Structures are given as C-alpha cells and as structure tokens.
Image (cartoon, rainbow, N blue to C red):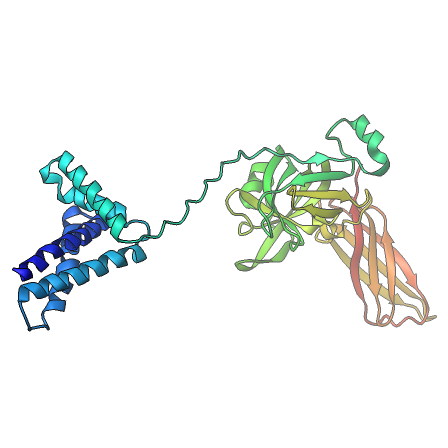
Length: 391
C-alpha cells in the first residue's frame, strides 16, 4: 500500500514537470502533439533509467521515488534555462492538457497548478523590459551661411542664406561615414546629391549615373587617375563640373573622378580634398554639423588644375653659358586657367616660371633664362600652383 502511495504522490510533481515542458514547447510554437511527446520522453525515460538499476524492495516504490526526484529536478532546472517562464509554461501546459474537460475546468486547473508551482519553486524575476525609444522625426536640415568677421553687414545685404565665406553643413552618420548634402552644377541645371565627407579622398567622386543625370558625359580622351578604394585600386576617368555648391558657397570648376565603387545606396560619391581643402573645417559632433570657412577667394586650385594642364619644355645652353628654358602649357579643360606657377628643377637648384592665363582648350608658351653656370643637363618640370579663370 505504501509503495502505491509513494507512486501516487509522485504523480503531482510529474504532472507539473510534464505541463511545464509542454508549455515551453507551445510558447515556442512547436506542434502540440510534438511538444507533448517530447515532454513525456523527458519525464518518463530518465525516471525509468533512475529506477532500473535498483532491484531491492518494491519496484512501484522505486518508480515513485524516481518520479519524485526527477520531477523535482526538472522543476528546479526549468527556471535556469527559461528564466521567468515556469509559472506561465505550467499554466499553458495544463490548460492544453485539460482542454478536453472544458474551458472552465482547464482554466481553473491551470491557475491552481501555476499557483502551486509559484509557491513551491523559487523563481528569479525576469530581466526588466527595456523601454522603447520614441521614434524621433528626422528634421530636414539644410546648409546655412554664417557671417565671418567684418562681413556681417555684407551678409545682411545679401539676405539670409547668401554667400558669406562661411557655411555650416549638417551631417548624418559618423566616423568615416558622415553623409552631407552637396549640390552640383551641370548642363542640365543644379542637382542635389548625398556625399560622404571623406578627408582621405584627394578628389571628389561621382558615379556615372549621377553624371548622366547632370548631362555630363565622359570623353574617350579624358584624363585618368588611379584611386585606392575599399575594393582595391581602380582607374577613374576625370570630368570637370561647373560648380559644387555647399549651401550658398559655390566652388566653381571642380574636377570629379568617375567612380561607381565609391557610391552605395543613396550616397553618390565622395566629397574630396579638392573641395574641402579650400576651407578651414571644424566639426561639431554635438550638433552634428561641419563648420567651413573659405580660406581665400584666390586660393590655389592645383588639385583640380593639374589634371588638365600638360606641359612641354626645351632648354638651350649658349656658348657664353646662358641657359634659356621654353615652357609650353596646354590646357585641355573647358575652363581657362590663370596664374600658373611652374617649377623647373635642375640638379641642385629650382626655378619658378610663371604663365599668365591659358584659355580653355588652348595653350601658351613662355621663355625664361637661368643664371649662368646652372647645371641643367637634367631637369624636371612640374606644376606648382594654378587657378581657374573666374569672372
């Protein structure tokens, strides 16, 4: 009689453990029959395994003892693997098992068993639920001009947003992925693009699709440069755009490298140093703004000009020791260049040769003399400075 009593009392914790396992399966959207089968195997097979090696005494009592031990162990272990779920799992499991008895009976049994488990088995409270952050509407921010120094009155005359030599540009993202709004002037009028503000890029880049939209084609004889991208080195042809607009500040005649690999998603290219280098730049990470002040209206534009000017030179050495160097600069750009400064580097000395304006798609030649005795048997000619001819 005692053996059967032991087994009978073990049915309580066995039922609670079985219901908890069924509830865990149901809450994870397992098929109900599959959840029941898995729970039965997890409850009965280990219990029979515990009782089988013991042959002394009544086998019924051993099954009851094994049922008590294993079911209690399962009830204690469930909160460790599924914290905060034991009470709810038991309620869901009992409700499903007792469903054939009617909704009212199943509901009463599930509440009773859940209360019993909560009283017997200490459970850790589940981790607090993180507060959901409110979705903040992204305010549409536009670049704005700011007065500098004595230009406050001039800014008032120009009206709000007029060019003042200083512009504040909002950015999105961070690190090396600061996305800024940039305008481009082309044959089809102004176009707005989202660019990466890249302090490591020498040249500004645009994709072919962006250039096509602006009405700019790439001529077959366009200058070509090699760019280092995240996907390796690529050869990029160059085009000349009429202007790059940072708010009200316009950088006229900007060299742009055609690079599809530099564009991704809504970003159509990189804003390079041939534009940003014309400004003194400071970052305000709190306001997420880039403060840019124009260095000078007559700032050197060598980073743009150098790709469009080809130079040729000859040196003549006279019997009296005089040296004359003739330098020809050919401008392949569709904009004129002005104030070219050319360096003639001989073996131990270097000399500057200045050229006045060179028209678009034109050339100009100048001739200079070097001091007598200069060793110029070998020399190198490079472009040092240059600006576009602006109205």
